[in-house]
Length: 396
Image 1 (cartoon, rainbow, N blue to C red):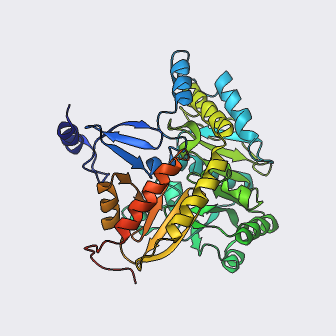
Image 2: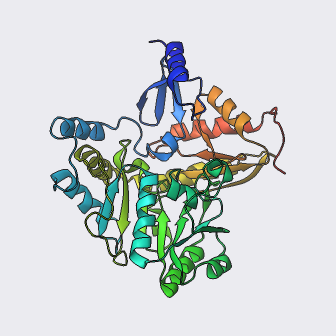
Image 3: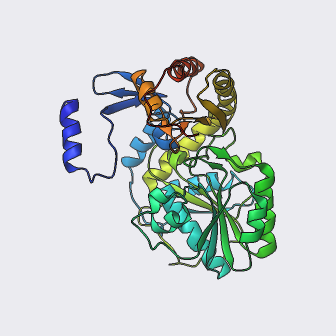
Protein backbone atom coordinates (compact mmCIF):
# COMPACT_ATOMS: atom_id res chain seq x y z
CA UNK A 1 0.00 0.00 0.00
CA UNK A 2 1.13 3.51 -0.72
CA UNK A 3 0.78 6.40 1.73
CA UNK A 4 -2.50 7.68 0.28
CA UNK A 5 -4.10 4.22 0.44
CA UNK A 6 -3.07 3.86 4.07
CA UNK A 7 -4.60 7.24 4.94
CA UNK A 8 -7.83 6.41 3.09
CA UNK A 9 -8.20 3.04 4.85
CA UNK A 10 -7.67 4.56 8.30
CA UNK A 11 -10.09 7.40 7.55
CA UNK A 12 -12.71 4.94 6.32
CA UNK A 13 -12.45 2.40 9.12
CA UNK A 14 -11.13 4.26 12.16
CA UNK A 15 -13.57 5.10 14.95
CA UNK A 16 -13.06 8.83 14.40
CA UNK A 17 -11.64 9.53 17.87
CA UNK A 18 -8.26 10.76 16.59
CA UNK A 19 -7.43 13.87 14.60
CA UNK A 20 -5.26 12.25 11.91
CA UNK A 21 -2.07 13.82 10.57
CA UNK A 22 -1.50 13.59 6.79
CA UNK A 23 1.78 11.80 7.50
CA UNK A 24 2.27 8.02 7.34
CA UNK A 25 5.01 6.81 9.69
CA UNK A 26 6.39 3.35 8.98
CA UNK A 27 9.74 3.09 10.77
CA UNK A 28 11.71 4.47 13.68
CA UNK A 29 15.33 4.42 14.82
CA UNK A 30 16.68 6.20 17.87
CA UNK A 31 15.17 9.69 18.03
CA UNK A 32 14.09 9.58 14.37
CA UNK A 33 10.89 8.52 12.62
CA UNK A 34 10.59 7.83 8.88
CA UNK A 35 7.54 8.26 6.67
CA UNK A 36 6.39 6.03 3.83
CA UNK A 37 8.67 7.91 1.40
CA UNK A 38 11.73 7.49 3.63
CA UNK A 39 11.74 11.10 4.84
CA UNK A 40 13.30 11.44 8.29
CA UNK A 41 11.66 13.39 11.13
CA UNK A 42 13.07 14.27 14.54
CA UNK A 43 10.61 12.85 17.05
CA UNK A 44 10.09 15.30 19.93
CA UNK A 45 6.84 13.67 21.03
CA UNK A 46 8.06 10.11 21.77
CA UNK A 47 4.52 8.84 21.32
CA UNK A 48 3.38 11.16 24.15
CA UNK A 49 6.34 10.13 26.26
CA UNK A 50 6.56 6.42 25.47
CA UNK A 51 9.84 6.23 23.52
CA UNK A 52 12.31 7.29 26.21
CA UNK A 53 14.75 4.69 24.86
CA UNK A 54 14.15 5.83 21.30
CA UNK A 55 12.59 3.68 18.62
CA UNK A 56 13.51 0.06 17.88
CA UNK A 57 16.16 -0.23 20.59
CA UNK A 58 18.04 -3.43 19.67
CA UNK A 59 18.10 -4.85 23.21
CA UNK A 60 14.36 -4.42 23.64
CA UNK A 61 13.71 -5.85 20.16
CA UNK A 62 15.88 -8.86 20.95
CA UNK A 63 14.07 -9.46 24.26
CA UNK A 64 10.66 -9.26 22.55
CA UNK A 65 11.72 -11.71 19.83
CA UNK A 66 13.19 -14.15 22.31
CA UNK A 67 10.16 -14.06 24.62
CA UNK A 68 7.64 -14.20 21.77
CA UNK A 69 9.30 -17.44 20.72
CA UNK A 70 9.00 -18.82 24.25
CA UNK A 71 5.76 -17.69 25.98
CA UNK A 72 3.65 -14.65 25.18
CA UNK A 73 0.76 -14.70 27.62
CA UNK A 74 0.15 -16.07 31.10
CA UNK A 75 -2.35 -14.94 33.73
CA UNK A 76 -0.73 -13.78 36.97
CA UNK A 77 -2.20 -16.72 38.91
CA UNK A 78 0.78 -18.67 37.60
CA UNK A 79 4.23 -17.33 38.58
CA UNK A 80 6.62 -16.65 35.71
CA UNK A 81 10.36 -15.96 35.41
CA UNK A 82 10.02 -12.71 33.43
CA UNK A 83 7.35 -11.33 35.74
CA UNK A 84 9.41 -12.15 38.80
CA UNK A 85 12.47 -10.48 37.26
CA UNK A 86 10.45 -7.33 36.49
CA UNK A 87 8.92 -7.18 39.96
CA UNK A 88 12.37 -7.48 41.50
CA UNK A 89 13.74 -4.67 39.31
CA UNK A 90 10.80 -2.33 39.81
CA UNK A 91 10.58 -2.64 43.59
CA UNK A 92 14.29 -1.81 43.84
CA UNK A 93 13.71 1.59 42.20
CA UNK A 94 12.06 3.43 45.12
CA UNK A 95 12.72 2.73 48.80
CA UNK A 96 9.55 1.85 50.66
CA UNK A 97 7.56 0.68 47.62
CA UNK A 98 8.16 -3.05 47.70
CA UNK A 99 5.09 -4.43 45.89
CA UNK A 100 3.79 -3.92 42.37
CA UNK A 101 0.50 -4.39 40.53
CA UNK A 102 0.98 -4.89 36.80
CA UNK A 103 -1.52 -3.82 34.13
CA UNK A 104 -1.46 -2.50 30.56
CA UNK A 105 -1.57 1.31 30.49
CA UNK A 106 -1.36 4.52 32.47
CA UNK A 107 -5.10 4.92 32.89
CA UNK A 108 -5.33 1.33 34.16
CA UNK A 109 -2.59 2.08 36.68
CA UNK A 110 -4.53 5.11 37.94
CA UNK A 111 -7.77 3.10 38.12
CA UNK A 112 -6.02 0.44 40.19
CA UNK A 113 -4.49 3.03 42.52
CA UNK A 114 -7.87 4.66 43.13
CA UNK A 115 -9.48 1.31 43.90
CA UNK A 116 -6.65 0.33 46.22
CA UNK A 117 -6.90 3.64 48.09
CA UNK A 118 -10.62 3.21 48.70
CA UNK A 119 -10.14 -0.40 49.72
CA UNK A 120 -7.27 0.47 52.08
CA UNK A 121 -8.95 3.38 53.84
CA UNK A 122 -12.62 2.49 53.67
CA UNK A 123 -13.18 6.04 52.47
CA UNK A 124 -14.71 7.35 49.24
CA UNK A 125 -13.45 10.84 48.43
CA UNK A 126 -10.50 11.70 46.20
CA UNK A 127 -8.78 15.08 45.87
CA UNK A 128 -7.01 15.90 42.59
CA UNK A 129 -5.41 19.01 41.11
CA UNK A 130 -6.66 21.56 38.62
CA UNK A 131 -5.02 21.10 35.19
CA UNK A 132 -4.45 17.43 36.07
CA UNK A 133 -4.58 14.70 33.46
CA UNK A 134 -4.78 11.12 34.74
CA UNK A 135 -6.42 9.22 31.88
CA UNK A 136 -9.69 8.71 30.04
CA UNK A 137 -11.43 5.74 31.70
CA UNK A 138 -14.13 6.65 34.21
CA UNK A 139 -12.11 6.68 37.43
CA UNK A 140 -9.06 8.38 35.97
CA UNK A 141 -11.30 10.74 33.96
CA UNK A 142 -12.98 11.77 37.21
CA UNK A 143 -9.54 12.82 38.50
CA UNK A 144 -8.76 14.60 35.21
CA UNK A 145 -9.63 18.31 35.29
CA UNK A 146 -9.99 19.59 31.73
CA UNK A 147 -13.66 19.79 30.80
CA UNK A 148 -12.97 18.95 27.14
CA UNK A 149 -12.12 15.37 28.19
CA UNK A 150 -15.09 15.13 30.57
CA UNK A 151 -17.89 16.58 28.45
CA UNK A 152 -20.35 14.01 27.18
CA UNK A 153 -19.42 11.41 29.81
CA UNK A 154 -21.08 12.78 32.94
CA UNK A 155 -22.06 11.69 35.48
CA UNK A 156 -18.55 10.58 36.35
CA UNK A 157 -17.48 8.75 39.51
CA UNK A 158 -18.75 10.66 42.57
CA UNK A 159 -16.51 11.85 45.36
CA UNK A 160 -13.85 13.67 43.31
CA UNK A 161 -12.83 17.30 43.81
CA UNK A 162 -10.10 19.53 42.37
CA UNK A 163 -7.87 22.15 44.01
CA UNK A 164 -5.23 24.53 42.58
CA UNK A 165 -1.87 22.86 41.87
CA UNK A 166 1.14 23.92 43.96
CA UNK A 167 -1.17 25.53 46.54
CA UNK A 168 -0.53 24.12 50.03
CA UNK A 169 -3.34 26.07 51.68
CA UNK A 170 -5.85 24.50 49.27
CA UNK A 171 -4.62 21.02 50.21
CA UNK A 172 -4.99 21.85 53.90
CA UNK A 173 -8.64 22.72 53.33
CA UNK A 174 -9.52 19.89 50.92
CA UNK A 175 -7.91 16.79 52.45
CA UNK A 176 -9.80 15.60 55.53
CA UNK A 177 -10.88 12.52 57.47
CA UNK A 178 -13.21 11.49 54.62
CA UNK A 179 -10.47 11.60 51.96
CA UNK A 180 -9.31 8.22 50.64
CA UNK A 181 -6.55 9.65 48.46
CA UNK A 182 -4.85 12.75 47.16
CA UNK A 183 -3.64 12.17 43.58
CA UNK A 184 -1.03 14.48 42.03
CA UNK A 185 1.35 14.52 39.09
CA UNK A 186 4.99 15.24 39.94
CA UNK A 187 5.04 17.25 36.71
CA UNK A 188 1.77 18.16 35.06
CA UNK A 189 2.32 17.15 31.44
CA UNK A 190 -0.92 17.51 29.53
CA UNK A 191 -1.78 20.44 31.81
CA UNK A 192 1.08 22.56 30.48
CA UNK A 193 4.36 21.07 31.80
CA UNK A 194 4.15 22.48 35.31
CA UNK A 195 6.59 20.87 37.79
CA UNK A 196 5.47 20.50 41.38
CA UNK A 197 7.40 22.52 43.95
CA UNK A 198 9.36 20.47 46.48
CA UNK A 199 7.63 22.09 49.46
CA UNK A 200 4.24 21.35 47.86
CA UNK A 201 4.83 17.62 47.53
CA UNK A 202 6.42 17.49 50.97
CA UNK A 203 3.37 19.22 52.44
CA UNK A 204 1.09 16.84 50.55
CA UNK A 205 2.91 13.92 52.16
CA UNK A 206 2.56 15.43 55.64
CA UNK A 207 -1.12 16.33 55.21
CA UNK A 208 -1.98 12.82 54.02
CA UNK A 209 -0.12 11.29 56.97
CA UNK A 210 -1.91 13.52 59.46
CA UNK A 211 -5.37 12.79 58.07
CA UNK A 212 -5.07 9.12 57.16
CA UNK A 213 -5.36 9.65 53.40
CA UNK A 214 -3.10 7.92 50.88
CA UNK A 215 -0.86 9.90 48.54
CA UNK A 216 -0.96 8.75 44.91
CA UNK A 217 1.65 10.21 42.57
CA UNK A 218 1.09 9.82 38.83
CA UNK A 219 4.42 9.46 37.00
CA UNK A 220 2.99 7.91 33.86
CA UNK A 221 4.64 10.60 31.72
CA UNK A 222 7.40 11.86 34.01
CA UNK A 223 8.82 8.48 35.02
CA UNK A 224 11.77 6.37 33.88
CA UNK A 225 14.42 9.01 33.45
CA UNK A 226 12.37 11.67 31.69
CA UNK A 227 13.05 14.42 34.28
CA UNK A 228 16.68 13.54 35.02
CA UNK A 229 15.97 10.99 37.77
CA UNK A 230 14.35 7.58 37.46
CA UNK A 231 11.20 9.17 38.93
CA UNK A 232 10.52 12.87 39.39
CA UNK A 233 9.62 12.36 43.06
CA UNK A 234 13.31 11.58 43.66
CA UNK A 235 14.08 15.25 43.05
CA UNK A 236 11.86 16.11 46.00
CA UNK A 237 12.62 13.46 48.62
CA UNK A 238 8.98 12.32 48.81
CA UNK A 239 7.74 8.72 48.78
CA UNK A 240 4.05 8.27 47.93
CA UNK A 241 1.86 5.39 49.05
CA UNK A 242 1.11 4.50 45.44
CA UNK A 243 3.19 5.39 42.38
CA UNK A 244 1.54 5.04 38.96
CA UNK A 245 3.72 4.43 35.92
CA UNK A 246 3.43 3.16 32.35
CA UNK A 247 4.40 4.67 28.95
CA UNK A 248 8.16 4.08 28.58
CA UNK A 249 8.47 1.21 31.09
CA UNK A 250 8.70 -1.47 28.39
CA UNK A 251 10.39 0.47 25.60
CA UNK A 252 7.16 0.89 23.62
CA UNK A 253 5.30 -2.32 24.47
CA UNK A 254 2.02 -1.62 26.32
CA UNK A 255 2.36 -1.96 30.10
CA UNK A 256 1.32 -0.17 33.27
CA UNK A 257 2.20 -0.60 36.92
CA UNK A 258 1.46 0.67 40.41
CA UNK A 259 4.21 0.53 43.01
CA UNK A 260 2.73 0.06 46.49
CA UNK A 261 3.85 1.02 49.98
CA UNK A 262 3.03 -0.67 53.29
CA UNK A 263 0.04 1.59 53.96
CA UNK A 264 -1.81 0.01 51.02
CA UNK A 265 -3.78 -2.76 52.70
CA UNK A 266 -6.67 -5.20 52.26
CA UNK A 267 -5.46 -6.41 48.86
CA UNK A 268 -6.75 -9.98 48.84
CA UNK A 269 -7.10 -12.40 45.89
CA UNK A 270 -9.86 -11.19 43.59
CA UNK A 271 -9.78 -7.57 44.78
CA UNK A 272 -8.50 -6.51 41.37
CA UNK A 273 -7.05 -8.22 38.29
CA UNK A 274 -6.01 -7.76 34.68
CA UNK A 275 -6.13 -10.45 31.99
CA UNK A 276 -3.03 -9.23 30.17
CA UNK A 277 -1.36 -7.54 33.14
CA UNK A 278 2.08 -8.97 33.84
CA UNK A 279 2.18 -11.03 30.64
CA UNK A 280 5.63 -12.50 29.93
CA UNK A 281 6.11 -10.59 26.65
CA UNK A 282 5.60 -7.15 28.20
CA UNK A 283 7.59 -8.12 31.27
CA UNK A 284 10.56 -9.29 29.18
CA UNK A 285 10.47 -6.02 27.23
CA UNK A 286 10.31 -4.03 30.48
CA UNK A 287 13.24 -5.92 32.03
CA UNK A 288 15.28 -5.15 28.92
CA UNK A 289 14.19 -1.50 28.91
CA UNK A 290 15.06 -0.98 32.59
CA UNK A 291 18.44 -2.63 32.01
CA UNK A 292 19.13 -0.21 29.14
CA UNK A 293 18.10 2.76 31.31
CA UNK A 294 20.67 1.67 33.89
CA UNK A 295 23.47 0.72 31.48
CA UNK A 296 23.15 3.86 29.35
CA UNK A 297 22.34 6.13 32.34
CA UNK A 298 19.33 7.58 30.59
CA UNK A 299 18.28 9.65 33.63
CA UNK A 300 21.74 11.24 33.63
CA UNK A 301 21.52 11.83 29.89
CA UNK A 302 18.12 13.48 30.33
CA UNK A 303 19.48 15.78 33.05
CA UNK A 304 22.48 16.90 30.98
CA UNK A 305 20.68 17.16 27.65
CA UNK A 306 17.67 18.83 29.23
CA UNK A 307 19.87 21.52 30.77
CA UNK A 308 21.62 22.03 27.42
CA UNK A 309 18.32 22.31 25.52
CA UNK A 310 16.71 24.56 28.14
CA UNK A 311 19.63 27.00 27.94
CA UNK A 312 19.30 27.15 24.16
CA UNK A 313 15.54 27.67 24.35
CA UNK A 314 15.83 30.43 26.94
CA UNK A 315 18.39 32.17 24.73
CA UNK A 316 15.84 32.51 21.92
CA UNK A 317 14.73 36.13 21.67
CA UNK A 318 11.08 36.09 20.75
CA UNK A 319 8.29 38.40 21.89
CA UNK A 320 5.91 35.44 21.54
CA UNK A 321 7.46 33.37 24.36
CA UNK A 322 5.97 33.80 27.81
CA UNK A 323 8.04 31.15 29.66
CA UNK A 324 10.24 28.09 29.15
CA UNK A 325 9.90 25.54 31.96
CA UNK A 326 10.28 21.87 32.73
CA UNK A 327 12.56 19.20 34.17
CA UNK A 328 15.12 17.15 32.26
CA UNK A 329 13.75 16.40 28.80
CA UNK A 330 10.17 17.24 29.74
CA UNK A 331 9.93 20.83 28.54
CA UNK A 332 7.13 23.28 27.89
CA UNK A 333 7.39 26.52 25.93
CA UNK A 334 4.44 28.69 26.90
CA UNK A 335 3.49 31.09 24.15
CA UNK A 336 1.35 34.21 24.08
CA UNK A 337 -0.51 32.75 21.12
CA UNK A 338 -2.08 29.43 20.21
CA UNK A 339 0.61 26.97 19.20
CA UNK A 340 -1.02 24.99 16.39
CA UNK A 341 0.58 27.12 13.62
CA UNK A 342 4.01 26.71 15.24
CA UNK A 343 3.61 22.93 15.42
CA UNK A 344 2.68 22.83 11.74
CA UNK A 345 5.73 24.95 10.88
CA UNK A 346 7.96 22.63 12.90
CA UNK A 347 6.57 19.64 11.03
CA UNK A 348 7.50 21.34 7.76
CA UNK A 349 11.04 21.42 9.18
CA UNK A 350 10.70 17.68 9.89
CA UNK A 351 10.26 18.00 13.64
CA UNK A 352 7.30 16.38 15.41
CA UNK A 353 6.25 18.05 18.65
CA UNK A 354 3.17 18.23 20.86
CA UNK A 355 0.95 20.83 22.41
CA UNK A 356 -0.05 20.90 26.08
CA UNK A 357 -3.23 22.89 25.94
CA UNK A 358 -3.70 25.71 23.44
CA UNK A 359 -0.61 27.77 24.24
CA UNK A 360 2.21 25.41 25.22
CA UNK A 361 4.64 23.63 22.88
CA UNK A 362 5.58 20.40 24.66
CA UNK A 363 8.92 18.73 23.95
CA UNK A 364 9.33 15.07 24.94
CA UNK A 365 12.21 13.81 22.78
CA UNK A 366 13.68 10.35 23.33
CA UNK A 367 16.37 10.49 25.99
CA UNK A 368 18.84 9.13 23.41
CA UNK A 369 18.50 12.29 21.29
CA UNK A 370 21.95 13.46 20.23
CA UNK A 371 23.42 16.91 20.90
CA UNK A 372 23.53 17.45 17.14
CA UNK A 373 19.80 16.78 16.98
CA UNK A 374 19.21 19.13 19.93
CA UNK A 375 21.12 21.87 18.09
CA UNK A 376 18.94 21.33 15.02
CA UNK A 377 15.80 21.44 17.18
CA UNK A 378 16.83 24.70 18.86
CA UNK A 379 17.75 26.33 15.55
CA UNK A 380 14.47 25.26 13.95
CA UNK A 381 12.48 26.52 16.92
CA UNK A 382 14.24 29.88 16.78
CA UNK A 383 13.38 30.18 13.07
CA UNK A 384 9.76 29.15 13.61
CA UNK A 385 9.26 31.49 16.56
CA UNK A 386 10.59 34.36 14.46
CA UNK A 387 7.85 33.81 11.86
CA UNK A 388 4.73 35.92 11.73
CA UNK A 389 1.99 33.34 12.15
CA UNK A 390 -1.57 33.55 10.92
CA UNK A 391 -3.27 32.95 14.26
CA UNK A 392 -6.93 33.07 15.24
CA UNK A 393 -6.20 34.96 18.43
CA UNK A 394 -3.66 35.35 21.17
CA UNK A 395 -3.81 34.09 24.73
CA UNK A 396 -3.39 37.41 26.48
